[in-house]
Image 1: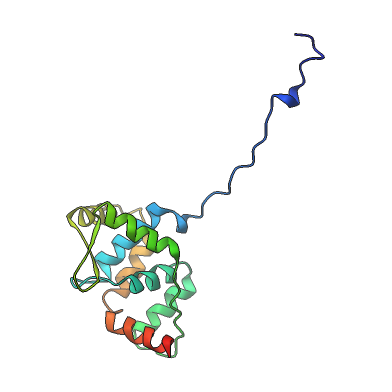
Image 2: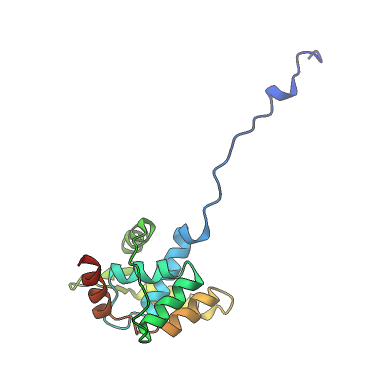
Length: 157
């Protein structure tokens, strides 16, 4: 090959790569959060999709976590916003398909046996989702479906 025929720029291609997906949009993170929520903050009755949305979206910032905790602890001067994140719907669809959760006849979601097993693994790892576990333990079962229904009625006017 003649040196003049070999042009380095013809053989090097720069393809732009998509930006990294932020952790809170990753399916594995959302599945883990949903399992934690169902296990630590929903009790035996189950959890509505609206409640999953409210808790997960609140977990995106310390300010929102504190607002939610203050609200459920009786400070009704807090302003809660029920936002819907489409990635949460996709997470629930995936969890249903993989039989991590099931939907009861009342519409609420609960963990399956495999979902409970996954939750146990998350809980057993002291280095995994530390702040999320702490927050959900503080929230506990204080955010009831009645509170969610009241909030939705308030928002609907």
